Image (cartoon, rainbow, N blue to C red; front, top):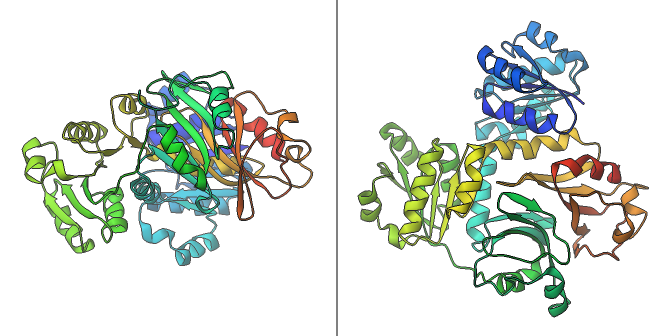
Length: 446
């Protein structure tokens, strides 16, 4: 595909790198000349310095032959104007990042679609929804639901006390022949492994497991985890992610929200009805103790500063908080953050990429998620009539190296994928894939 990315910093560059790795023709439009010179010196990407709302700049990017225009600058008005102009100038599809939640209501989406914007993405809203989901499934580090929760992907960090420790997948299957879950990947020492039968689980492994809803209880038992109820939560940062998460949770959970900006605190007090808003710096240990951090079940740090979020979560862990969630915008910090004890990492670049990558594939994508700290994706693809994926049992298919079929959703039913399972037309198939295998998987479903 010919893809034009309008950006003004890290999000655009991250997207460009991800999509370029999948052999698309990428052009970056960015107003920062020095940044683009650095990009040109390290990559083969085409760059254009300029304002993406300029018709002449878009024409220089050959917008009339563009299959997909993605606008992800920080200013949502710029993104909206860029997408509208690009569509009028000939781009086949356009995507705009927005910051205001009001823009993504059903009524407003219809208005933007009539103007030529095919899709809107609000990473802050998706991040807030992920936080809410994690507070209701406390044993998992990350969770992705399919088919209304009948099938889920759990990320679980394995401790020394896990019953599966030092056992191979074959040994676990022999001892428990009727399991309703399956390990699809193991992240160990910064490397992601697609496991085979003789691979064993080791301490501190991050294990990705596909499970049916009825398999969750036994999965948690074998992994040495237990559910606990979240009653009291501290949130640090009253920006869009923090305020949205609080709004979604405040009628169910007791929340204290810390925000250092006094003016923003007044606005938050007007917006939130049941949340206690505290004007203060959560890096102040005494303040955390005064606000009873020892009585907190979950601690969520979502300021605009990754270092602050990591530091405050570590403080919370020291005080015995059971669940910590940090917004970490620096991709390089994700792996180390998970290794030093932070339960869950939220990253808006990955959220944006998860939404956009599906537009670059030929198969019908029901959902796609770029995983935090792992160079891999989990994709829910729809099996098309006469596609290769429907021609044989799974064990007889040529599944590419670096990919694994974890589960299948068929109507109201869900199945764990085994070698003898036959995929049929219309099935939604959950595939765990490393980057090099994604387009080979795409071919199987086309």
